[in-house]
Length: 184
Length: 184
DNA sequence: AGCTTCATGTAAAAAGTTACATGATTGC
DNA sequence: GCAATCATGTAACTTTTTACATGAAGCT
Image (tube, protein in one colour):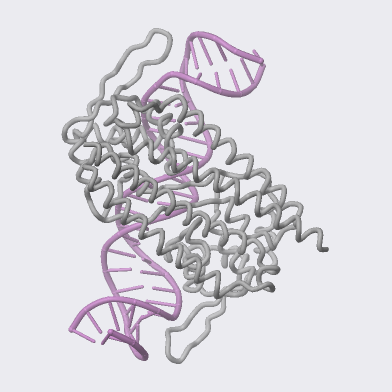
């Protein structure tokens, strides 16, 4: 059985309004950083497939300054495929590959100062993403949008909590390692 | 350029003590649920490759009651490959595919009661994982193990925080949706 | 009678990544 | 001069998942 979550993610974004592949990639980066990601080549491929299957239609738009673009519009068939999936009860657990945490879990193999430096870097990374989401939230949500796109608002708040949580944990872990160092 | 993080994860686990592929799969489930996962077929294939490359050695152990098993032992070459990777500065951001959050972000397409039901289920799922990690922590860590396997302890604490954070967010989100329902 | 645990795999398909390609415009 | 933004893609490759296979022991 195929999974095809990327397909549903794209259909969901197109449920908002028509977009190009390029814009869809940006949407992923803007509001889904903390729970999804897709490479642009993957997005273009999937959009082509969906067009062939009649879930979306494409229209080429000519531009003066920039190269032509291909705007995809959600069709009825695509929308029904999406809602069927959304109402489907089975839920699969998150698939996470966090290389930073993998490395942290192997700290016993490297010197303490390397470990601390690594945590500081990871912290900086998560702080950046936190800023990114905070900015996105500020420029996107008002009462109206929150009512209309409630799901998106909920996951944005999740992203904020997730990043803050990471940073808090990171501070705690750095402190733990520093105390260990002092003992020696 | 190849990524091969699975390889490093396996080498890291084998750094602890020799294991079979089957046991390695269980280790993943036990202590890495919240930041890594790998299918058993993937693990067996990678172990074979690493044996051929001389990073690990394998020994077949006969058992009376159960089928034969193949115990893998980390070699010097494997250990140096691992530490080289661990000390390498470049860090890649986490790759997360969270289908639950994807669905939440698309709540505008389904009725509110479905959304609430879905959040309750997801909450239950994360509560289960929280219990799982809590049990793992209790039966594994004492002062001694915490000193020896500091990295693992740090990531276990992270897992706990991650799950608690999810649950807190879930309660908040359910409340948000319930209030919206009342208004109508 | 059917499910789980133990234990290891092959083959094929699907999903995701990397390298490369094109080409104009704008900013440092 | 070099990098980034806009915009879309192909081909090759790597990684992950699924379906299938084997077979005994113990539990419900």
